[in-house]
Structure formats: structure tokens, C-alpha cells
Length: 392
Ligand SMILES: *Cc1c(COP(=O)(O)O)cnc(C)c1O
Image 1 (tube, protein in one colour):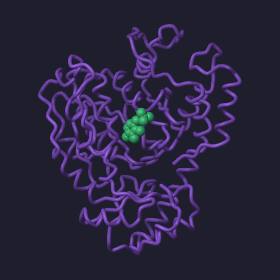
Image 2 (cartoon, helix red, strand yellow; image 1 turned 180 degrees about the vertical axis):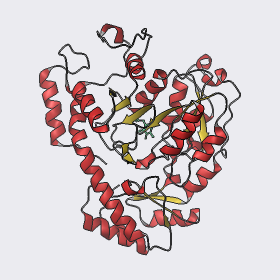
Image 3 (cartoon, helix red, strand yellow; image 1 turned 30 degrees about the vertical axis):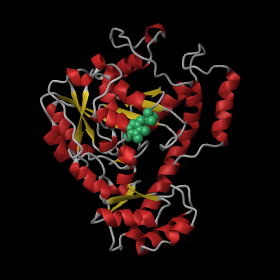
Image 4 (cartoon, rainbow, N blue to C red; image 1 turned 90 degrees about the horizontal axis):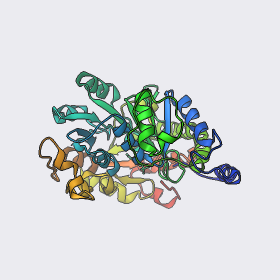
């Protein structure tokens, strides 16, 4: 997890001293503009738009791409509920897709879930794992579907040399406290498409027409909401961006060390990964749910069974599953082109995988010898790891 410290403190102090805290505070370019340029450069993408949070980025991405009532959007059965709620915010409905043992969308199930009304796929790079983007892009391009990557939980992670979030049509990132870059709450959208960019900028800023943007691609202004980030977020983001790649490098070296040491275990298998050479996320898979639960119980710190992080499992997304909107006449399920039904066992394969899989923290903020010690304990099935202070 990304640490926040004195450098962020000083950066925020400078913004407070300047008196210019808002995105458009009349002084031209501030920390937000600097951040967007630096992020675009580092990620190799044309446009970055900072926002209040990752959910805002997902919703703005869908609005920018013109996804709306009657459309179906494929989302995985294992993700944060925001991925499933985002299509509903623009009037479309989510259709759930099973994950495979990489913990990301199973391309074979994507094919099964596509209907004539499918408009977009939202692959989620969950828990720093990466989706099978080659296959997903091939499926999407062959059928004219949009790909909006949810890279909220994998900021900066690469898939075959490219940063996730920059491979599909639009990418969404979160910078909340639990993500790879941490400014408390924050987010960003990236795209190489000029029109998606200006539409996202209009949607995320209800006052966009008054900002004097000269590059609107002849796109008439439509009304939007307000998801604008503040210069305080911008100032922190600049500091956090500089810490990102060093942190990912520490995770990569710890992944290599831990998998080397865990490979010999008879109790579990190391989970598969769609780009193992650059992996920064580690999970182990057991034959039975009971073995996985027992392992998680013995190694409390730095290990948890995925099924037990219940908020990320679709069966617990009650407002979505029960199709409850803030106002009954603003309910996208009433506008869907067919009756959408959700059942607890609709993604039974995902549940089976989540019940048999444990996540192992890479301990990126801990020294390598301590990580090696923990790995030895995990490999031997011993429980001494419990005694060292080893937080997720
Ligand atoms: C965190 C997260 C989001 C939403 O980000 P917020 O910044 O919390 O709004 C979306 N999708 C996934 C997979 C996430 O983990």
C-alpha cells in the first residue's frame, strides 16, 4: 500500500499558502494540470483527466462513450461494487461474467454473456492482477464493443509492457487510501481518443461551457455533473506519482522471491497470471475451500481468503442484485431491452475459485529478509509468521 508522509504534507502546504485550491481558480496551470501531463507521459497515453475518485472516472468514461439506456455492460463477478454500479449511473445495466483462476474476467465467459445489446466490456485488473487483454481486445474489436478498463486496483501495473488502463478505449484509476497511489480519495480517466476526452471533461464538470476550452472537437455541450478534483488532490498526486514505480519494483522483486520459495509447497499451487514476468500480485490456490480457510486462519497477517473479502463478491452487492434505484422511474432495469435477472449462483465458478484461493501480501514496505522469512513459514505450513508484525 502506498505511504503518505512529509512530502505530501509540504506539497499540500504550498497549495494552501497559494490560496488556489479549486481546479479552476483563475491562476492558469496548477498542480492538477502538472499531474495530468506527467501521468500521460509516464503512462504513454494522450489524455489524462483527474477526478474526485475512481467511481467518477468509470461513470464519466461510460458517459463519454455514449453508453446508456438499453445497453448491457459486461463486468466481472469479483470486483468492487463500483464497477457494477457505474453502468447503472448512466442508465445501462451490468451483466456479470465469471472470473478464472487469474482472478480476472474469463474470456470464454465473456463470449457466453455477449448479447445483441452488449455495448461495452469493463475488464477489472483486480488486486494488481492483469486481465487477458490480448484476448479481450480481440473479442471486443471483432464485435464492435467498447473496452473500458477498470484499473482502479492496479495503478501503474503493466501488461506485456503497457500500463493497464491504456490498452482499451478508456481507462479508469482510483487513488483512494487502499490503492497503489493514495491521496485519500481521488481518481483519473485516461484515453487516446480526443472525442472521449472532451466528452468526459464536459460530463465531469457541469460548468465546462464557462471554462474557455478551445479544443471541444465540435462537440456541443451537454449537461453533466461535478466530479472535478481539487488542487490539493493534484499536489498530493504529484508526490505519489514519483513513488509509484519504485513501489511496483519492490513488489515485483518480492513476487519473484516469494513465488520461488512457495513453489515447492505441496499444500497449494501458485495462482496463474496473465503476464507473470511483470507480476505484482500473488495468490495461492487450494484443492478445497476448507484448506484455503484453514491456511488463512493460520496466517492471519498478510494472508486472507478471497471469498472472505465479501464486499468484492457479487453475491453481496444487494442494491444491484435487487435492482433498487434512488427513484423508481430512474431505474435502468426498467429500460433494459430484456428482463435482467440475477441469482446467487449465476457465477458459481467464480465463487468456487474465491473459496479456494488466498491472497498473499507482497510486503512491499518490508525488508526482503523479513519477506523471505514469512514466505518460508507459509511454505512450510507453520504458523510462526503470525508472531512477526507483518501487516497487509
Ligand atoms: C476502488 C475501486 C473503484 C472505485 O474507486 P473509488 O476511488 O473508491 O471511487 C472501482 N473499481 C475497483 C475495482 C476498485 O477497487
